[in-house]
Amino acid sequence: MSITTLALLVLAPFLVWRVYQRLKGMMTRQRSIVSRHYTGVGVFAAMILVAGSEVIARPPLLGWLAVGTAAGIAYGIWGLKLTKFENDTCCFTPNARLGMVIAMLFFARVMYIGVEIYANQGSGVPTPGFTDSFITLLALGLTAGYFGTYSAGLIRWRRALKKAVEAA
Image 1 (tube, rainbow, N blue to C red):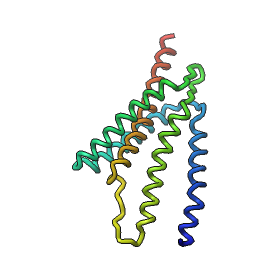
Image 2 (cartoon, rainbow, N blue to C red):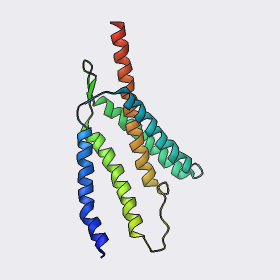
Image 3 (cartoon, rainbow, N blue to C red):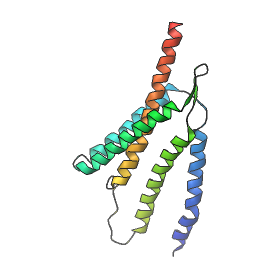
Image 4 (cartoon, rainbow, N blue to C red):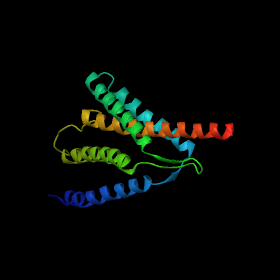
């Protein structure tokens, strides 16, 4: 076992812990900023569209991306129902468990791909592409579907608040 491998084995749990702590901080009460919600919709839609354009010629993989996206959208709708909205302060508190599960699942898949690339270094095995695995596409669709739907739901909530203020 090389020193690089040992260093990665020691640092990987630290990396997972740091990502977890960062995500945990993001899943608390926060002020709603509409521009961030629009950015979220755009970024997560782009993730799905870019991955879809990569696998357009491979229908089974495109199907897995679609299944992941549909499940993510359903999960996002459920997450919005569990969100606590504060209409007077324009703040919201997402359900921390739902967001953490989705984000850590995607992070675990990305880490797995990194480990796979590292393990195959110098072995002559070709480097796997990000869209070569149905599991990766499922995780990507689930993540982008959830957070994109969540952002769209927050935009919808803010529009309803604006209409209520204008009507009053």
